[in-house]
Length: 147
Image (cartoon, rainbow, N blue to C red; front, side, top):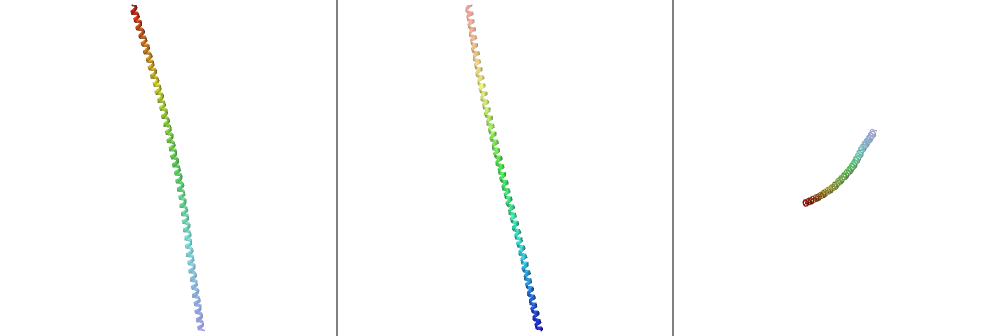
């Protein structure tokens, strides 16, 4: 009976030890599962954060590229307007020079005409004076002859 009791106790102890070992292994497996789950969660969050960073970086690059494009467009527009203004200034300056040259030509022409008219008036006055002197000399000669 004592031997049977001892064997029963031993079997119970063995069963309890096996149960404890099974419980320990189950707890270990659960702890490992929880650690793996936490690691998987951490990795998923890290991937999500990296994707969000990449998206933000991509957006930043897109905004920078658009800003650069608009800046380049504005600069091209400014340069086109500057060129247009310079061309307009050059055209106005060219027109001013043409008007000045025409004005000078007309002024020179008028001056030449005035000088020609003065010369003609002088020639006519000289001719009239020569005629008067010739007539005076003729009258004097006739008076001297009559005397």
